[in-house]
Image 1 (spheres, rainbow, N blue to C red):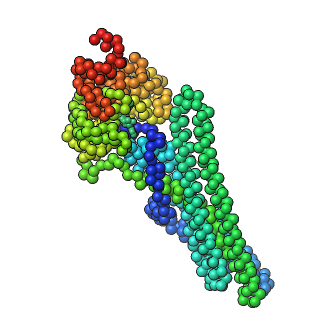
Image 2: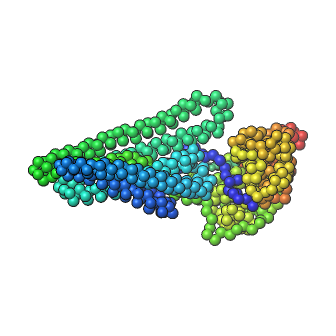
Image 3: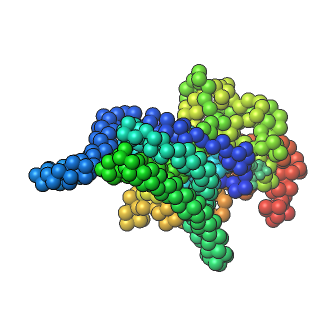
Length: 610
Ligand SMILES: Nc1ncnc2c1ncn2[C@@H]1O[C@H](COP(=O)(O)OP(=O)(O)OP(=O)(O)O)[C@@H](O)[C@H]1O
């Protein structure tokens, strides 16, 4: 049994220009509270570390509070009283506080950084697992590079928020409240005057926050574009070279990176405008303390030490605001990233299992399509009232012109897509009533787009059955006529095949994919154009391998090349989603209809003989 049956079926690539999330309906901005709530849900198991970090942070705030008190005491009491003995204690007190601050900050920062990493680890894995659970149509709609950048770049942005900015926010909130209360207690008039500036600051922050977040969204989308372009062009490098399209691609790349640069410049401009406004408001606070404090002092209502302490507290009070102007940058950047992550997390799979889905018992492989309607989108109906029967243990072939719906029919059997109407059954079980894994474990697909992973030959063959022994792998490779060329490699089965199997020839890749299917030993085989574009010798090897693969199983063979399906038990000719002719090769030739015309096109000489 396969550990990861879905992986073997996953068709790569996406269709550009189709609807994907964010392009149809406008994505609802995710709430910042929602973001924090989710982060806390992920972080809750780390509560001992969180509590320790919070205690450290509170201690930092208290120490910060003590230092201005030492200044005040020095100015108001030690200097006027010429108490030289007290200076040593004050010096030691300030240095001691500095050392303690350093230690406490080290503990809280390193704890929060490791919590951030753990949350990130969980979030990234959840996202990946969720993506894997989505169906093929999701991957049709979305660009690979864009999805990659959500899992890598967007998740990393959240890490910065968790490990540094969130703690900073908490520290600032605590310091701000403690100091505001203390200042109110010392002189409520001066403090209220100061606090009057804060609503202006909050409003400015809100106004800028919205714009900064929108710009960050653009930055992240442009990164996704860059990553998508890279993914497409690096995997298609041979095509680019064959069309000498290097300059064209470099220009397209530069266009995308320019969009990224422009979006970043927009963010920088917004920040550059925001920070001076906040600084101006901070200076207004300082002016108020100086002018009003000096006035009170001249009237004998306030000591000089209090004014000095007040300016120090003012700085501490303004620090959170100044930090906030920086943290807001991270928060808005994270919110934009979080939105993009949640778009994936909130996407529900179109293909799902019923709650009471049963495990499909080992089947014989009798498959029936009854009145099936299927469309990829509203505009394009591929199958309408479609009926088809695949007899158990027999080879059924589908032929027909390009776009007539052959691959679509094949993809409905492992439930890559679900029909909008009608039913498909296997041994009488409706596909919708059985679990996806029990269904897919009994189906093997060998397609013309062979997907091999970077790894060794044995790893690729074993992908369909991770428990297979080495002997079983060798036997499968033998049956797939692959052992000859594999053993000829100096490293044999341990030969690395490179990304997507680039180090192998087309025919070799095909035989490895057949070996992989044989090792899976499924009841049902779907063969999509497996012999396209091969030389005669390779094709002969492959035909032998295929004959062994198909033997005794229910097979659906999709072939353009009629030579490959002459032995099929039944051939259906498909036109625009309808079966127009059915029979064996000889019967269909005798009909002198669509099939015989297709055959004559492919084999003009044979036709002449007949
Ligand atoms: N993932 C998809 N999303 C939207 N439309 C699709 C998708 N796959 C196929 N189609 C459309 O559905 C129709 C049937 O395509 P299908 O691939 O089943 O034809 P086919 O007979 O297998 O063609 P070929 O022999 O060229 O592979 C075509 O019009 C095609 O454009």
